[in-house]
Image (cartoon, rainbow, N blue to C red; front, side):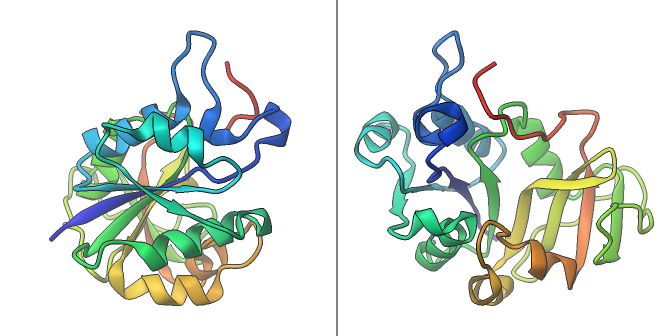
Length: 209
């Protein structure tokens, strides 16, 4: 089974004063490059990056990383536009995809590995937004496949990354609207939540820290 990574980095980053794909930490670390490396080190076979508000400069940054670029021409319509563009253009060889956001600086490769492995505290439930629907135990593993629907949770709160098996791609494309991304689809289906609160906060940030 092949799992690719999909990094959503198309936003204008108005509160940051520049497109999200161009933001750097005070020490100069590129959020874009760090997120790509996180997905690669976490076990993704290939990483595709969705760009929109800025394209040329981020594409140059990505040169040599092995990541491919997908341009969401309707990026201003919200996160869902980026998600739809990304899922539509993913490599046909992939069986599943790990979706994450560029503005989650503390989400590490360890988080991606845990979510892909399905190990740690697994909490599941249909539409269980708290993530406290029930535990399948600690240390279990559940390989990713075309029907996988899984996401990280932080202290019980669902977050990114989200793993979507290929069977879910078209339904997510059809249902994603505005800034909600796959939220409505996930709320209506049985999602396996993998607790990662010991590894990261999973919080998005509005400015370099």
